Structures are given as structure tokens and as C-alpha cells.
Image (cartoon, rainbow, N blue to C red; front, side, top):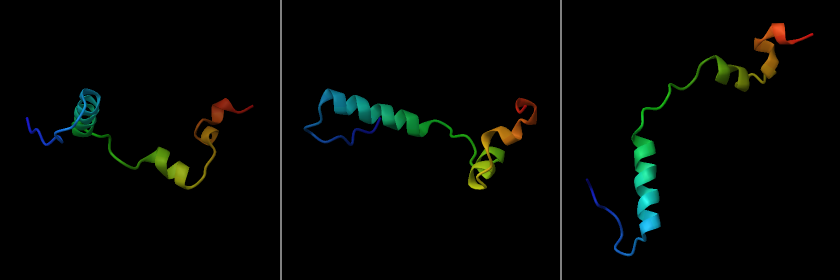
Length: 54
């Protein structure tokens, strides 16, 4: 375990740093896809579910 913490780090700061490192090391979902294309094209959220409209 690398300990590149500053000498005056509080326990709360250490816990936050370790938590952020653990979150960053988690595998991330792939970017892009239908949802982000719809968002970039400003398509209304309900357009992908035509059965939800009256």
C-alpha cells in the first residue's frame, strides 16, 4: 500500500482519500450508447417508450 499522504493529514482526510482511491479503482461502465446519444440529440425521455404515451 502506498502511503503518499501528507504528514498533517487528519483521520477523516485519510479515510476520504482511501475511499476515493477505492472508487477510482473500480471498473467503470463503457461510455456512450443509446442513452447518451439521446441526451446529446435532446430527444425527450419518453420517446424511447412509445407505449407510455396516451
